[in-house]
Length: 129
Image 1 (cartoon, helix red, strand yellow):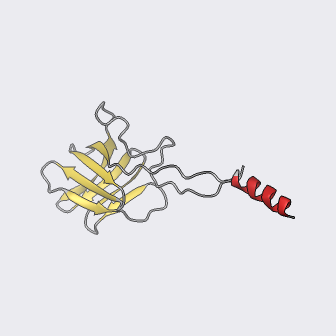
Image 2: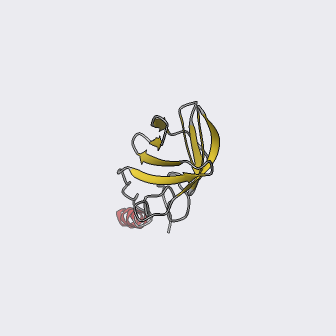
């Protein structure tokens, strides 16, 4: 009986995938918007926030909001929402606009999207093999 329990425990231990180490470092992305403006967004973790810096406006530090897919940061008056490298941006005193992440040497690799193009948080879960 003990042998069966040990074999079962060893088999189950091989099925679980370890969670990847989360990247706790802030991520910065540069955007060019359809209204002609540019902005820099610094995404931080724990807590999830986005610091939006746009020329001519005061910087806004927006908390993360629940969204089914993509990303959303809002303080109730300003909102940054998108998927992959495109984002809708609205703030008091400015018309809503669509912004596109710039792929420059300084911003390369610092984008919102993961390798699969999804910027939403990844959930670590049990994985059977």
